[in-house]
Image (cartoon, rainbow, N blue to C red; front, side, top):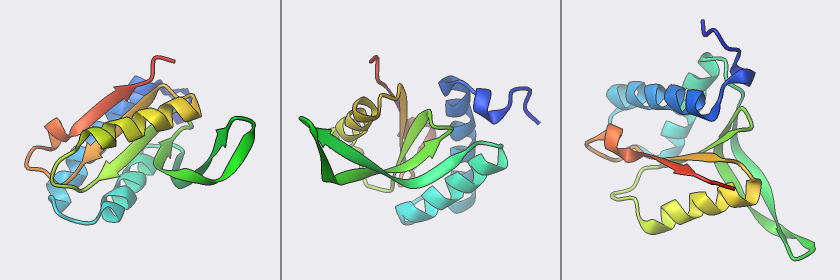
Length: 133
């Protein structure tokens, strides 16, 4: 059991738990599956650690002074503090990084993790993206 309750975890603590879960999932399942498989497995592992985990979280976009009906969905939101975007693609591109940074700016959150499970090196495929507000 962790010394801190899940609600008291910092963004860095959550990032550490996510990295550990990613290694466990990758070593068990390997690369090449659908993103939804990794998303579900990651949510499961983080819930086992006592984290509050929401998947496919709808988030409206406000433009000017109107709320647009078309928003976006966060793949995973952990403890209302960290956004995780799960990918299973040949290569992460600039658009993946920019997408997560935009999500961070629109939500006002400080940390996002971009994770590509379709890789031969999971350690090098977990990217931290910080929003310095």
